[in-house]
Image (cartoon, rainbow, N blue to C red; front, side):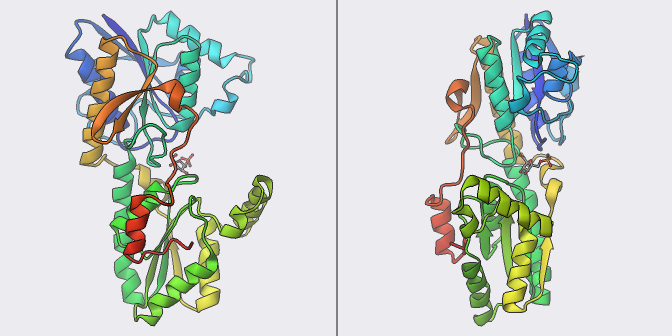
Length: 359
Ligand code: F6P
């Protein structure tokens, strides 16, 4: 007999359902009795004891379905120790729900913030397992998160579409992609779709160098230029400031422009006189069906998670190391971010291709 709780927390992504299916199928095929409690809308469901009892049938036919059948919400880790509006101790409430239902394990799907709360619950004595989701691919301790390649597909398709219209009109196009703190999505989508300039948070850009790259293409006879810009891209002069000053300078930019891409567009337009457009695919990047890679990754991570539950091994994130699925102690990874290393092979290769990073 196994009793497990499942919850999805934080921003959604494409393969949440596929991963839960992997966990439940992996258990249902290997234990006699299985009870699955699905907590609604992330940690909220665990705090307020809002759950549904699910059967294997609920997980049938959801391998390809985007979003999450459980719903999700953002419950900031920082506020977990702060009582709610009615004075409820959220951590104690979550522990109470867990013990009331006599769960063997809580399986938590989410990104960095979610992982920190999962680790807190582990420290509080609950059996937890974490499965790494995010289109940002910025979770430390796993080479890949599910959702990432599905988002890369959408972002790359967007840039592909922009490419044809940009070349027809001889325009400069900026495609702004998600990623406030990590540039993996922009880097991969940019390379996949032949962007000319890629700007990511990990490599602060000099506007001068960006303009030079645009001009260089014009001099070589390419009338159009495509920039893939992460929403967290940052100018080098601002990146050099103290944290407080940096926040202020970035806030000033977003007071004047909808986002950093519009500021870059205005600056390039002013310097080159070229026609510029900005495209922001936004939450489309998290939507729709998971790509085949993510379906396979999710099935493998879910399957390993089921095995850990069968073996009664708890307190881990199930991640990918190269091509191998591995358990990683939550305490060793929670709170750490996996950023793009500006010296990594992908960047070296991209620069060899002539892609400018504005540095
Ligand atoms: O963490 C995933 C992510 O999609 C980021 O890339 C993006 O910056 C953020 O979530 C958007 O959050 P929200 O859905 O709250 O607008």
